[in-house]
Image (cartoon, rainbow, N blue to C red; front, top):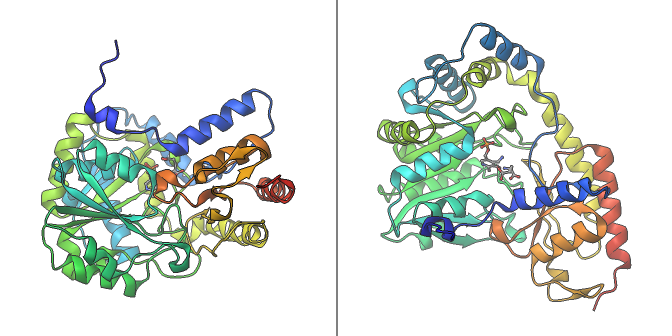
Length: 399
Ligand code: PMP
Ligand code: GLU
């Protein structure tokens, strides 16, 4: 007899992994599928970071680390925050975790009580709403559309605030929209939140470096909300280290201590060798790794030139991260080759099964009209994927 907790029953599987698993299964059956599902850089980890990991193994960094991470790593994080974001943090304010995912969970578990509200500008990253549910909280969605580059305004934010609001959680640059908030836009948001000292901003900046047009701003740069902000970042995207599982939070001291308390009972300190290698990654001039961003930018332009001509797609020109999030409303409520399309998830599944291109439907990102393409894939695959979808939709029987 299955005896699941209410907590588990409230949650869904991560849709990014559902779709990538489905791709894997089709490939194992010999089907030639192109996967644009998971958002993960396809580059190898840079050599100097690998060398640092070998050195850590040879130097026997094989024991438990302090729960919030090695002191020298936390110091390197503080240097990075000063160098790139002009933010002052002490090592005591940093908690190193098993990926940014755990860093966000630590913060949410530290502040959310049953029934507390967390504001999520939609679209949002798939795990946010699920994490809020896991903690017994309630997400309050602030809707946006492609016409505003999927960004909320300060006025929309203020309207969503209630006495139960505990946090605002967003990513900038944003997964899935590929937009980022400018200095002025974040200043407006900061001015609103500063009026409500009971609200914590959880600012997920994991795509900080993958920004092709503007300068990244962290909302913690605004002094009026520094004490209310948890900055989240990590090694996965900037250094192609998704499997190494290192992320971190930078918080006011009370919240950093809470994260350490939670993490100490859940998972302990993060992987010791990966922590040591992360010091090298953070202390290297970011220019050394710029080639990955230049490559993503080329791919963004390539995909844009092709995706905008796909019949029925309404797409904007994303400025950051590595995703396209076209609006495919045109197909919703229609029948394609005999398949009724209820929402973007049906459409993504239909594309996978018929055009053999894996994407992720927008329902679990909080937008049932859009689908997400990750362009962290080779140019060859990207061209072929766009061609397959274009040709398929041009010839599909539509009613
Ligand atoms: N935040 C966002 C917006 C993401 O897209 C991801 C997934 N890559 C994460 C956090 C989690 O990253 P990780 O746990 O690999 O550091
Ligand atoms: N964050 C990546 C994505 O959005 C990896 C998968 C996940 O952690 O959900 O695809």
